[in-house]
Amino acid sequence: MSPEGSTVSFRPVPQHFGTRPIERFARKLETEITRGRPFECLITTDAELRRLNRNYRGQDSVTDVLSFPSPPVPLDRGVTRPLGSIAISLPRARAQAREFGHKTEQEIQILMLHGVLHLLGMDHETDAGRMARAEKRWRARLGLPSSLIERVQS
Image 1 (cartoon, helix red, strand yellow):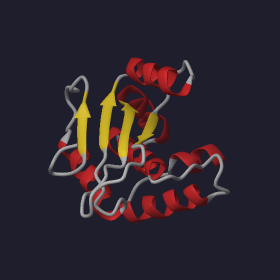
Image 2 (cartoon, one colour):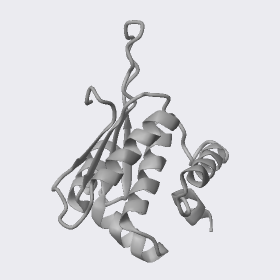
Image 3 (tube, rainbow, N blue to C red):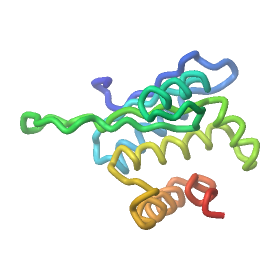
C-alpha cells in the first residue's frame, strides 16, 4: 500500500487511456466507502485474471473482477489495516463497456466499486440482497451506470 492511500496499478500500462480518473476514483471510494482504509487495485490482462482465478479460486476461466481481502491481523492502536486487493481485467472492462453503452472508465469504476464491497465482507451470492442494495445505492451516489448485480438480475 502507498502511504498516500489506495493505489491503482496498470500492467501493462494501457495506451490511449487516461489513468488519472481511475486513480482519483479509488481515492474517492477510500474516502466515502471504506472509511479511510486503503486498498490496492491492479488493472491488467485477461490472462492475468484467468491465472489469479485459477490459483486462488480453483476456476480456470477469465473473469472481470476479483477481490482478495486482507487476512485479519491484530494491529497497534491507530494503525489502519489495508482492506486487501482487487484485480480487474481491462479487456473485459472494455468489452462490457461496449456491450452496455458507456465508457471503459465507467466500467472500471463499476468493477472497482463491486470489488471494494467484496473487500468490506459483502457477498451477493449469500447475503439475501444486502450487497445488491449497497451497490445500487453507491452507484447512484457516484453517478455510475447499472451495477454488475443489477445486470445479472435483469
